[in-house]
Image (cartoon, rainbow, N blue to C red; front, side, top):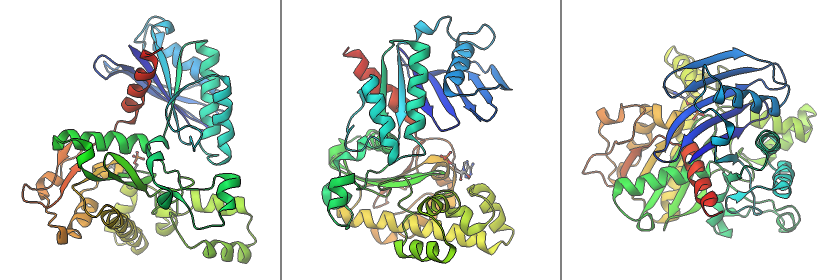
Length: 398
Ligand code: AMP
């Protein structure tokens, strides 16, 4: 079975064609600057690469370009679009409407679009991608897999905000979480590496990338996660503030005469590592600046590590212990110093890591020693494969 996994952003479309017999990727690529120009990079599994500027005024044109590349003589990996068995769409927000992956029809696509009200950066674009695929692929089965599904097991005491209850009833304002597909994939891997049933483990998964979230998993289920109503919540990220005192925002809004949209923009796009360092949203640039003596870059680094540690600590308390901690995402997989900082502050639990193993990059590895009181892993995430597996399961039953 061949599944095309599509991840649509407002001006981008990422894709992977996955062969479900062995999970291998036949081709993958990224269309960028859709609607404002256009650029495509496509890589076939044998190493053939196509990269060029190409005008794409909307997601439909981007999808047409992808199909052309996938089926073309020079860079293609299939001869006909019909060889693709199903299309899987990643969706950030499913709210309470979509607790599980679903087969898409027009009504469901519209419902996903409507949920854009609470995920404006993501859901509108996801629906555009679905409509584009519908035009290009006709009636081929399409499945939506939601980042929020894995977090639907949180109990109300974890997902409710202490606001007047009517806002939950009227607008479903509550914590939904994000990166659920990654937290599920990584925690499943932890159980395999531990050779135990996930139900018998207390796991903390740290997805640390440009967006970051940490999740507590007990009895095989998510019991709490750091992202909230939107992916702005939790701890500081590349450009996002994470949790802060809401009064700080109303105070700044009054002082600077800012609208709610302005505040939203500042918290989502100008804060976090970028806002504090003034250097970049990228941890590599910030690390280099800090090493060169930039104090604000060092402060951003210190704040990020401290906030991550506190979330890990919260979840250890919430689960009354922890068996395994796993790091994933661009930062989680590549920043040994951050991992060492977290682990050194957990020595009260007997956490002990092997510093040489901790330096390894880009592969699955247990970095804790055999004597460690808690197992610590680095596990490269693979959201696309998890999405494709969910899709295969649903489509196989059709
Ligand atoms: P992601 O959103 O998962 O792609 O992660 C992006 C973040 O990972 C950025 O802050 C990068 O600086 C960081 N990152 C990616 N590769 C490396 C690396 N080799 N060393 C340190 N940080 C990295």
